[in-house]
Length: 208
Image (cartoon, rainbow, N blue to C red; front, side, top):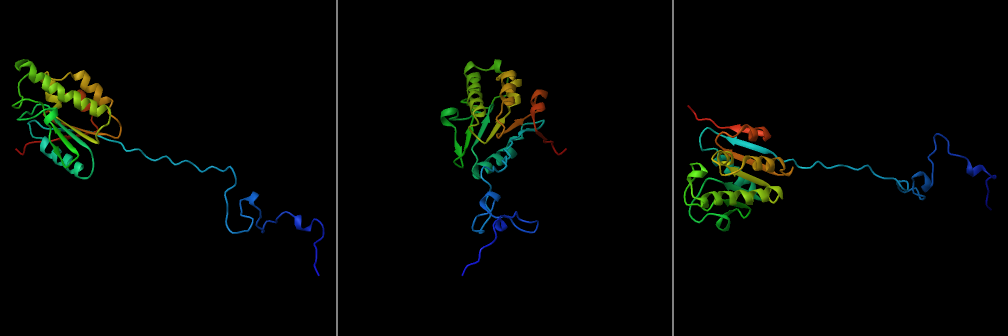
């Protein structure tokens, strides 16, 4: 024997204390789990992008490079791609084709000259000027294409002051630095234009 409800009794709208049923109201017909209404969209979550720094390590003497080199080697050991460029340091078997590699990820580049450079560009043979500019051309391309995670440009300001590199080009390239990339400038006191671009400035002083 079966009982039936009066017509319309089972169609009453749910009261305040009752839970509505049916998939149209966001509940599975079997009452097992809640389902999202059709066509519902989840809010987008924007992930923060890494922001690199332009740092300046300067000193009244030549000596700010060693601490930065330690940081560069440590970064390479942790998996970052690093380029270290020393514009005024020479030596045996240097240049683009002979640059050594450390930790498998750090490339150390010097101009193809036999000795360190301390005099203005006009006092040297044209080959010396070309060797320094070759290092800048390579590092310039690596910087603009974000080919590395960290770039160290040693004595960049001094190379500008001695006439080896054009200040306008250097400033324009640094201003176009890709946002996630870290760049460190080292060397003696630099031009105010370079200092103005820095996110962080570290000044080393002698202990006397």
